[in-house]
Amino acid sequence: MFDVAIIGAGAAGMMCAAVAGQRGLRVVLIDHAKRLAEKIRISGGGRCNFTNVGTGPGNFLSENPHFCRSALAGYTPKDFLGLLREHRVSWHEKHRGQLFCDDSSESIIQMLRAECETARVQWRMPCQVQEISRSDTGYRLGTNQGEIHAAKLVIATGGMAIPQLGATDYGLKVARQFGLKVVEPRPALVPLTFDPAEWKPFAELSGVALEVSLATGSGRARGEFLEDLLFTHRGLSGPAILQISSYWRPGEPIVIDLAAGRDLAHELIEAKPGNRQQLQTVLAGLWPRRLADQWLQAAGQRAGADLATMRLADTPDKTLRALAGGIHEWRLVPSGTAGYKKAEVMRGGVDTRALDQKSMQAREVPGLYFIGETVDVTGWLGGYNFQWAWASGVACGRAL
Image (cartoon, rainbow, N blue to C red):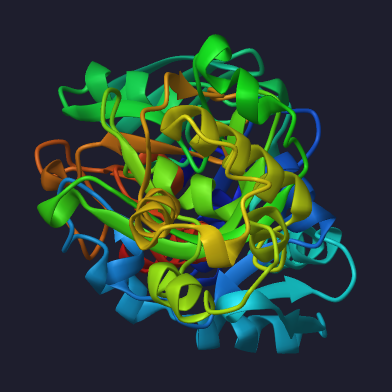
């Protein structure tokens, strides 16, 4: 008999277990995996992008956008950095406020394990939970290691991203079992794919990267980012696409500005007088050469002219404006995403309108809690999802 049973020993689950256990509660932490916290281990190229210094509610997507405010305010990136100092874990800041371990992700895993050990958390791992039911004393869990009884139950099983590491929809099944609504889940922070025939002209650009601005959607559902874009054989990837993928809906276009922050038409027209350089050479000064060559070839086919060899001084202003317009507003309709195997997170999950924002408890099911990626709170790329795991785990651990 335990005060709390937590299913899922990932970032949110271990944080919640440590906080609850250090408050004197008897906690059991259950996970079906043989190896602890694989998603933490592989994150950030093995160095774990564990938070972002700029974390705020605006960095998260949810059908209930205000839900995350309380937890994020209650446990901030500074609070997590304080925990790192206690455990002497060194770190460094990279691009756009992203924080990484100086050594490996294993430092974070061992820190969380140590926090749980200090809290006298009991482990059941690997352990399969085969059924969950309500009992007079709270919850009864039927597992392959026997029955576990707990007054309260926390679901921290994450989402469906990276199934090869054991990710499943288990948390969503539990939510439905107890009558909670689920916001339709889908892959997020994931590469976008395109129709092979339509993408064929660009497949040769695989490996080309550049900074772009891009957008999709409208109103509250609009996403807009300035990030690096990467061409691949099947479509587009890189931070820019991973970011926008969380906002993209099937059938919608994405609009990419391949010369972000510039007025390309003005620059080209201003540089015209006496400029005998070919357009190919001019664009190669702006972009990677392969992209300049491919873009002018495609644009020339549409215009019925050999733009690549045309000299800037001889190119009509109208042609330059059309060329610049296509560069600043490249509209594409993806055919889909690379799926959960390539996604970093799941968007959607347990509908947070059914949860208390301070405790993460289901309003209509006393003693049942949902935290981390299982719930409908999805962060941007760059450490935000880990901060949500820490914050929601702490909020729940304090409330149990």
